[in-house]
Length: 274
Length: 279
Image (cartoon, rainbow over all chains, first blue to last red; front, side):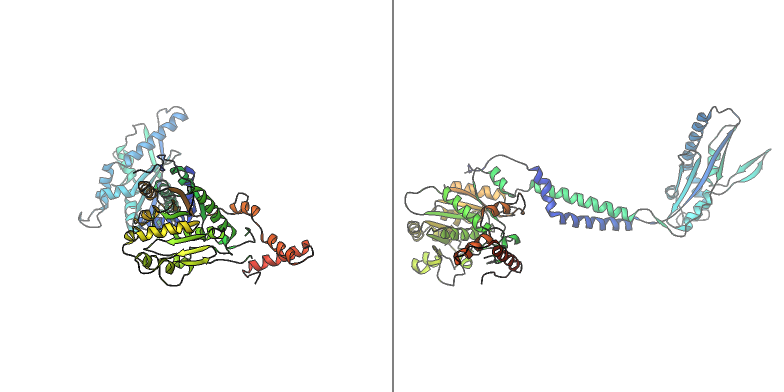
């Protein structure tokens, strides 16, 4: 038989739902510490040693045709650089690079660098200013980085081809490939000038910041812990305070007895009367 | 007497005595008043109140003990019966020596006078339980139990009955049918609404008068402008006031303010050291 004392109302106390978990701040602190440690450990695992090196090319073009005003010229140079970047990332370039780098190495050998691997370690980006092209090589071993870099940034030689002198680049060179694949027109010449001497660093750099991961892990764990505690507070069907009894049942609360363990209750008379 | 008083049966129980903090005695007096108003009026005979809870561990025995002491302190002739034959604790609460209890009486081994502990506190008698019984329901359904309850209700003004949890065993409901009403003890972050609802349904099914809830082990708010303490400090007697009254009664001369301040300072210093002020 259902007691008539039980009400059918469902009341959510949102303020208590979000404030009550804050009393157990130590749980959130422990979770944040665990999250920070986990993030740091993840950084240690994910952070592989990388030997990175970047070659910077100044891209210039000269045209005997009228290119219009400076705005048109800037637009043309930006478009040119974009196209260079696209060309340098083509699969056929990496096929060529693979062929050159792996000369004399058996395909089954562990030292064989595949096209996919080369595509993952060689990246080409253009500068926001619009006239610089960066070719970056980032491999897990310094020898690999140097080997790839030497091929990618191999300089060209001025050679006489027929009646003209032309810059001829070795196979695998990114500039050579771009020059070969990108037709600029008969009246327009494009020049790529290497303006830095790329050197492979002695010490590797980490790909992932461990401190940042620790911070993110700690913050995320703390927030997740708080949200879980709020959810538990919301869904738990325990009596939480006297108002719960008043809201849920048509019966009086005859008395409220306090926590006898409270140390402040130990003072008799002096503070609270007798 | 501002002494540090902490009389515990265990770490989590406090039995009221003359040194108990004002706030504890006052809350129990408030509960006593509420219960006495909640119990249906009777033309003759005392009021029998069953103290129970939905599940174990909510503080039934402690509340029942302190409630009985409060009624007795208020001048009512009171008896408390330990009807928890699975975990009897009233004997421990009052520190009673080993002897015969309710199980022995209901089994017909001893008479009622042999188990009744008289004047354990002024105006308070105790019917303890020592042995655990394998068949409490049968004992509570016996004529001896009915006769005992009728006799106690006639003789005493308040009969407090400590029972097992209602949801755990049927003893609580059986005993409560012999009383004028049942009070459920609840604890925050311990009692479950589902358990309370099951208990209320059982009480309703047995047609027992449900008097109300007692919220136990509530965290007290800190002192301050809106603090509970501040409100009581205004209405309660301070130790300074009481000491002043004692000094005034002992001497014919008027007490100067300097002397009161000096005593107050001494009181504060000694209380900080947790030493008794009046030996």
